[in-house]
Image 1: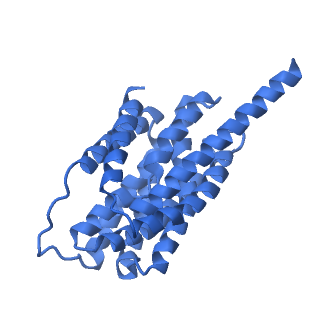
Image 2: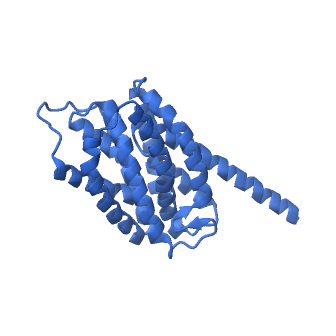
Image 3: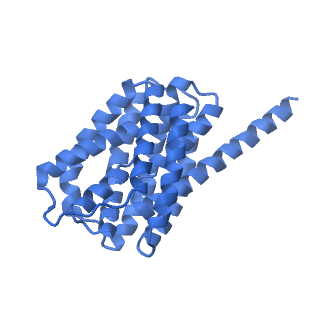
Length: 275
């Protein structure tokens, strides 16, 4: 009986790791293809599996966000490096926005730390619904006089994006790509630059979540709000998939994929809110 129980536990552990790896492949591919960190896909899947595991409901969202952000540092670095090799990363934009990112991620992580898991879940679900709707709408025509802001306005924009991103556990690419496109940055360079910004957001936000969760989330196989098995599996698999997405971003027309992605977001958002 004891041997059968141990065998069942091992089987479930293997299934969990495979599921984490599949999550990382999806996140990494989307990171490279669309310039997003992948958290908007990773978190619903982590919530799904954490709910099945023996984890307190009050910690599920915090653990999902922290793990998502930490694993995102690897796929966003991999994706942004691939874009950098194609000369699609604009460092004059990254430098001023980095200041806002350092401050904004600390604010967002602090808000998330003190928020309840239920609030974060509903907040995330609402955000997914809004993003899904936005992806279904046609792209707006840009005004000819919309110029890229100067240093401090760019920093302020980054502060807002980073605060929201840290609260949601996303890399911010879902916001930064349309923002940069609005200022007439060519779409391929907007995606490449957003990937680099997502790396900075996920890196600093993950560090803050690690610090805030040290004394709050005392779980087996976890450090702060970071669940190690998921972190390792997602990080490794996403690093493999991210360059593929980045390569296809420079070859494919992504309109149809965006529509499919939008429908998936609408379904995931509704489930997060209602479940």
